[in-house]
Image (cartoon, rainbow over all chains, first blue to last red; front, side, top):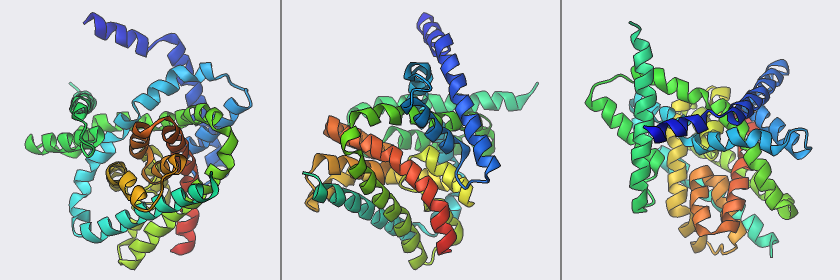
Length: 125
Length: 229
């Protein structure tokens, strides 16, 4: 019990909440830009690019973001498990396509692997 | 008594419990026993056995997926940290990832068209090479079904994790950076996990390739779908 309490205390520490607030601010900026310019790219991706640029030009120090960004990335996979579970609803829908689907996905993945690797291998030493 | 509140707690709880359990099994070191895949399959089986509809589970699930927004933004910080480590040949890596990433989108759309697959599958699978949070956002953007994307993206990652390195070696790729970049570009985080096992250099290259391709695919997919369809 004590360990759980300490874990939660660390999870919701002041520095982390502040960092999380900063990240939400970048998310908001991304959403606003995406909306204003009617961009086909989601607000969170624009927020990610904005955060990178802000860090690179030292407008924001990494230590102000890191407490929350590390935790978010640690739990990243948990956040998309519900989408994976959602596949059960669509299972019947894609069941009839599974063979051509698998062929296309595997072929495309192998091609992507090879193309990326050969460019670096041929030009790198 | 508000029962939807209880379902939300149930949804979040079962997700965390199954994820923790799957993490324990990971210790056995069998590549295709990916913890995410195991957690997803475990939850689906659990819901089926107790006859719980997905909508009830998703009351909590939705709360978890809300965090994908800030989590994708947080990748910007991760990207920045990694960027400092390989500044010097960032240009070459960028070129390789941009071409590889575009190739990934174009080839899947092309193959699916060739096999006469329906439109909703093409829209849902175009972003299959990139990390799930970004892929899901791209799918929403181009009008596909995010749940299909999530499942396929994870399958792609597991495939890359298990067979990617073997395939690249067979094709004569020995350069550590090339292997890392290829795994990150084609098989996102799950492929990157394999690259990290190979060593620090492929791991870093894979991580940065994954982030770069996330951006490349996010920008390029709506455009490609617009022109090809």
